[in-house]
Image 1 (spheres, one colour):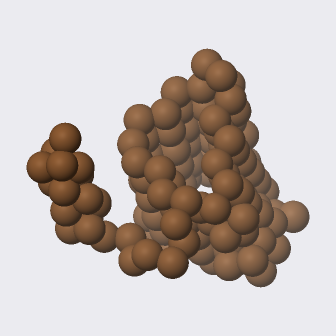
Image 2: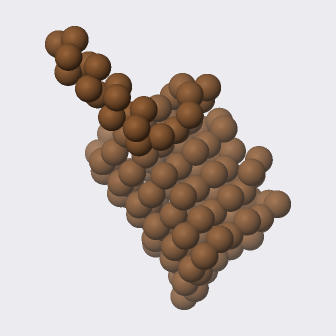
Length: 123
């Protein structure tokens, strides 16, 4: 397991063939493929994230795509979008954004806006 410690700031694209713990800051893109991402309570991520499982105890602003599960802990603050078959948001955690559990659909702002428009027309 790789670790980005509290004193480290990474800007750009980050990829790894192992699990990753973020205790510092990452801005850009994190692509772990079939591996797991843990954002500690001190971690601060502003990125597009792709991983198998994403567990957040710190701050994340961006887009998350996970093939298995996303878990937002009590100490977490998440703003953005989540696309994953299973999402756990602990009671009291801060989340502002969109969640999609349908992994077969393409993730685009246009499709999200169209869905909201259709719901408004039907109601």
